[in-house]
Image 1 (tube, rainbow, N blue to C red):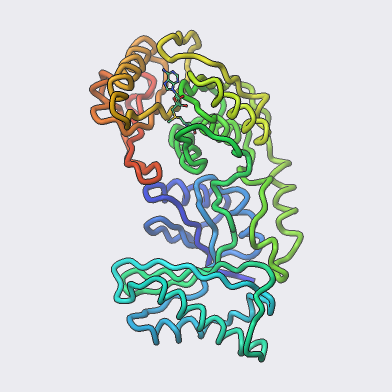
Image 2: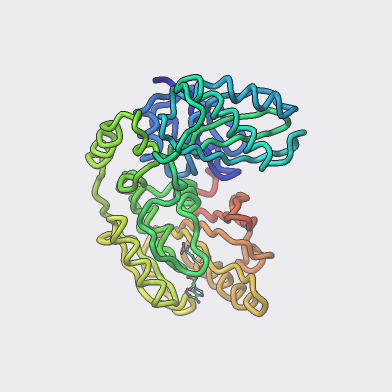
Length: 376
Ligand SMILES: C[S@@+](CC[C@H](N)C(=O)[O-])C[C@H]1O[C@@H](n2cnc3c(N)ncnc32)[C@H](O)[C@@H]1O
């Protein structure tokens, strides 16, 4: 069956997500704030959930209509044939959000939508009540400037939950953002890679998966796989196809961190992700690190210095990064930081920078290119 699908993502990385979709062969893309819309069937739902690195979720768009009153919301929802999607035992979980809309009470909108879904189900199943003991169907009502969008979530847990990170450090980067940093750096496994503040290893694990062409979500399960009406074999087919596309990785990847406990979690995560053999995790204080390799790519998320007394320490670390870049003109450096006065501490203006949200924290990806790439 053909659906309108929506892949959601963090604000600011829509272009990366649409590039990923283009690379997977989708071309009818409609890009909006925090999402990309396109057309696809059950196979495409499996492909997108398993392959997309920067998407948060894959949703089926059920309806879009104007709703300035509860009655409009009720009628617009009831008009959707929910019985064609949800079995008689389905557990209907409604979530909601409202931005700049007359219907601003989210709990009220959710309960109206739930009532309307039940009314629609009654038309198919000819009964008054539903036990809701079966598979979960998460329906979201989103209101933006009085335009209601009803969607059904196919992913379940957010797609950043690849399944490899049971353990993390104090300020782990979301896997989807780590993947976005690696994609933005253009890293493809042909140069050695280092993260000197690697924490639980997220950037390096995502980088190794990208370089190996290993789909990020091969191993995890998705909620739509539990739906009785969803074809059982498509996910296995896509997983098998994805496994057959995995390449070897020749260049070295190294992660350093001061904290030996966090390094042990990084090792466990890399093992679970199937990339342990490609990454060295070594304890080191950045001040003591001396780089000897040529043509290194450094992608890192150093401490931001949020707590009192830490700012000075972080300034010292960024000064050393700047000195390292000055010594090694052939290095590419990508540093995600929320530190005020970052470029001053580093001692050089970035060739490029880009605003990115790390959860709620506004950060910048400061990009310092190898000398020969400066013009590009
Ligand atoms: C923001 S966290 C990195 C999180 C990482 N990207 C992840 O996903 O887990 C910063 C890391 O820098 C490490 N760190 C702090 N000071 C350091 C130093 N002087 N040398 C090396 N690592 C340091 C911390 O132990 C912490 O793990």
